[in-house]
Each structure stands twice: as C-alpha cells, then as structure tokens.
Length: 433
Ligand code: 5AD
Ligand code: SF4
Image (cartoon, rainbow, N blue to C red):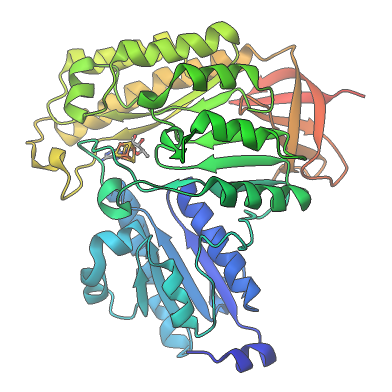
C-alpha cells in the first residue's frame, strides 16, 4: 500500500476506533504505538486519516450493531478519498469474517485478535510481532498508567459467551516479558499498572501463580498502584486472597463478574461457582476492609430465568453491596450453547428486569459512595473535568471518581484529599495541604 520511503517524506495518519473491553483498548493502544514506531501519526479526526482501524466487540448483539453502523458510515470517506484504507479488527472480524466483507465490500482488510502481526504486511513495513518484549507498552493516552496483557483467550465455556470462540484457548505471557514491559513503563514514569486477561487470576507460568506474579510486579521500582481485570471467582485461592489483603500496592478494588445470584442459573451458565462461593470472596475482602471496592457484571433474563431466580439476583445485589455494576439484558450469540435454548422471556420482560436491577444497584452505589464522605483518600489525578479546567478528576484506590479543585497540570500525581460530598455518583473532595 504505502512504501516506507514515502512515509519518511509524507507521514501518514491513522485513526483507531475502539469498542468493547479493556483488552480491546489495550490492543488498540499497542497497535497505535507500533504504527507510531513506523512513523505513522495519530489523528483525532477520522476524515484526516489515511488508515482507519475499527477494533470491534461481539459480546452482545448491540456491540456488533454499533460497530457495523460506524463502519458503514466510513464508506463516504472512502468514496471521497481513494487513498483511505479501512481495517476491521477484533472479535467481530473473527466472528463474522468473510461475511463482513460481503456485506461491507469497501472494507480493505479484516484481522481477528490473533492476527495483528499481519498488519505489517498490510502497511508494508516491518512491524515486529505484538508480544515481542521490546515492543513499547500501551500508553492509553497518558504516561502514568499502563495496561499490560498477561493472558489472552479463555478456557471457560460460559454458556452465553462468544469470547472463547473468537479469542481461542488461554495463553499466558512469559513472566519475564511482562516484568520487562512493566519495568520499561515504570522507568518512563508509569506508576499505575493494570494487568489484563479474560480470566486474569488463572494466570500461570512455569510454576508461577497469579499471586506470585502480583508479588513480582509489586517489587518493580516506581510502581505504586496495581490493578487487574477481569478475575474469575473460581480462581480465588487462599494465596491470592492473602496477597490482595497484605500487599498495599494492590489497589483495594476488584471487578468480579457474578452474572446471576441464582444457583440454578449459575449452573446453567456453567460458571463453576455457587452464590455462596461468590459471597465468601466478598466477605473475605470486606471483613478486611469494609470499603473494599467490588464491582460486577450482571446478565438479566437468561433463557428460562424464572421470577424467583431473578429475585435471587436482586437479593445478591443487596447482600454483596457492590460499589457499581455493568448490567446487561441477555443477548443470544450464535454458536454459543445458550443460543440454542428457547427464549421464553419476552424482550419487554427482559428490559423490565434489567431496569429493576439498574434501579436497585444505583441506590446501592449511592449508599456506598456516601460511606466515603469524611475520609482521607490518596487519589491519582487523571485529567481536568470537562466542565471546569480548575477541577480535576482523580481515582481512589477503591476505584471511585473524585472531583477536586486543582489548578495545576500534573496528571499522574498522587494527592491526599478529604471527601466532602457526593454529587450524582461522583465524590467531591478537597486536597489536603
Ligand atoms: N448477553 C448478555 N451479556 C453478556 N455478557 C457476555 N455475554 C453476554 C451475552 N450473551 C456480559 C457478561 C460479561 C460481560 C463482559 O458481558 O456480563 O461479564
Ligand atoms: Fe466469557 Fe466466561 Fe470466559 Fe468470561 S470466563 S470470557 S464470561 S467464557
């Protein structure tokens, strides 16, 4: 397509549109870093790009529909500029494959999650493979916080989930390569690192467990806050709980998807834990620190979910007191076992259950936020608020957003602040002198 020589004379511009999970954001940031190594420049405005990459998600029908609508929109840019290349990446590229090219023939190339190294052939320059230890870390639009993938794929077979089909079996990255990436990032000023994987706490490598890896990451000079997502309740070992509670660099927050509060639904979903197993993890974390942040994912209206089973999800929300939750109506995905089950619940009923769940969780989220008032918290300043440049947004260790008055420009700085009030779901604080 474009020769490297031409690139030196006229830098080419790329624009990435990313949908879906953190893993996609991570892949997008890594692809961006690799393109930049080759002299490509990012542009905010898609109209100015020579290449547009759309990184897609397939986890629910809506996610695919959004991406398809956006890709369809790009056709007019292609018509205006004969030079523009459009690439579709990620789970939908894998899931729909050739049929995507048939429906949207102006797409230049599609690459599934395991094929990103092929971008090098496409742009005709020698990109190294994505998991080479020498690759730049994913900066995610700032230089104090980095995502680092430690595992890809998923060996679980949750009955509703398309991820194992599009991302394949679990693979674990070599610990040496992970640690080198984090050391390089830390030397460049990164202090917060988020380890990523579909079932991140199932990580293992040459006798090293996830808990062991966490210990090694905590030893990297310059790393002050460690996060990870998403763990699976099945992989909460005693060893893991111990390090979560003892190692102060590991932020006191976990995003732990529960999906349902009903044992019979959990069984149908093949989640491999019970309501009681799940609540015992919550209990362990919260008895150590009542303000431990716990967030989750919930699916409402799984095929055959009875009113009683749904009520058990509501009662689990009350019991677990989640700090927040992503809540979804069940969406059948072709090729998954649950898509074969008859959906007896109407769309309206599914929506009604989802709304009840959202209403209850919002009330709980507010209560959890109110518990923070009066406390002193160390927050990481992220960016000025959109409304007022003298107000900044920061995050507490337990993953709550705090707005503080701040007129400096030091994103990535830790400050101590006192939480004074809750506005909406956001905390308002004052920086301590
Ligand atoms: N329908 C609805 N929600 C789903 N999720 C995954 N698959 C489906 C589906 N078929 C949700 C789960 C998961 C999150 C990433 O997306 O809650 O944790
Ligand atoms: Fe999907 Fe289950 Fe794997 Fe999560 S653990 S990615 S829900 S199959």
